Amino acid sequence: MTPGARILAAIDILAAIETGGRPADDIAADYFRRRRFIGAKDRASISGHVYGVLRHRSAFDWWIARVGEGRVAPAARSRILAELLIAENQDPDDIAASFDGDRFRPAPLSPLETRMVRGLAGRSLHHPAMPPAVAKDMPEWLEAPLARVFGQRLGEEMAALNQPAPIDLRVNLLKTDRDAARRALAAEGIKTAPTPYSPLGLRLNHRVPLSGTAAFRDGLVEVQDEGSQLAALLAGARPGMRVVDFCAGAGGKTLALAAMMKNRGKLIACDVHSRRLERAAVRLRRAGISNVERRVLSSERDLWVKHHAAKEKQGFDRVFVDAPCLGIGTWRRNPDAKWRSRPDDLAELVERQHAILASAARLVKPGGRLVYATCSLLREENEDQAEKFLAAHPDFTLYPAAQAWAETIGGDCPGGDDYLRLTPARHGTDGFFVAILERRKPDNTTVTPGRLEEPSPEPMNTHQAE
Image 1: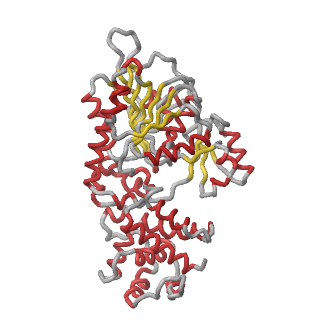
Image 2 (image 1 turned 135 degrees about the horizontal axis):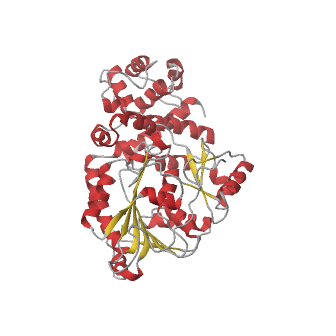
Image 3 (image 1 turned 90 degrees about the vertical axis):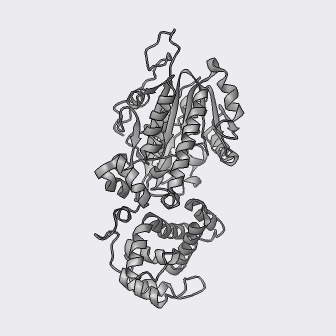
């Protein structure tokens, strides 16, 4: 494809994202699926233009308004022009040549666009006159709640969230170990490095056609961010346990939990979306997992939950709740999500998270644990939710994340004592939060407070030299 054809494709995809209401990766995947003639290098270039806009949209819109004197609309075409000039530092004459109106290239620049292109040439993503939220490329309404979390470090964290994320893989211990998986990938020309915290993780610094490799097809590895791997590990699921993945989605953490259980015990993957669970089935087969039951729920208060809540002595050892949230911690991968979110969304999600936790808690047996996780960075969705739950449920107590880390992974917890909080700037992972809530045993039993009767596993050493 010519540079102009790539630009036109990027404009088309971006326009669909701005009007479609669906996640950007879904829209881009549909676009490329219908145009299989577009090669890998062209797809990468087109995606680079699109995601460059999504990461820095507020800065581009500020420049478009400033240079265009308010006469150029901040739409897909003008935003792509700003991305080419500011983020990629392309030459204005080269850009004008790509906009020549050919059948497979964008229409020629208008006089207003030509003046804007000249005005944007040589500009940078930052300017002293930019409002703080624009300089940080974030929605203005989220500035205050994020500042509550990070204070003076907010700029550093937002800069990290605006960088592309690496590709992390989780090694499937049902089929291999990390060293063997690494060698298998290397034999196919894919170089990886061990992740710094997860003992199951391998990291790629650039995208590769992973689905075409034997290591992926044979279920040796699965794509999963290191933060998500750590959240699953902290659950402490072990062989023979009864476990529920309450918001399983497409099954990423279900796969991790099942591997920890070594296919022994019972794992029930629940979700309100049947299509997500259907996608999980393919991944489960590839991973060689046989102890998972998939169950579609009508809501968090489905009759299935009520039925199993009544059987307290036969309840579940672990109930994992990967709650729906704003997903701020995944902005590196899903930068379009920050422009779709609204204050009303946060209010609705906080209420839903509270309802989900309250319902899921009914499944936890005495001595069992409710593991609450989000990929959010907001206190409203994280610590505040855990504290609100504990205040309303005196039969539960906080199980320190640092203690769970020592028992399941080994060493010192890098992300807090009471709760696990991971961020891109500090840990190189997606933003993740984990609270572990343990249901108390009846008073007439003699157990050490905060500990289960079951023996603690040997911790995994995550910092061995590789």
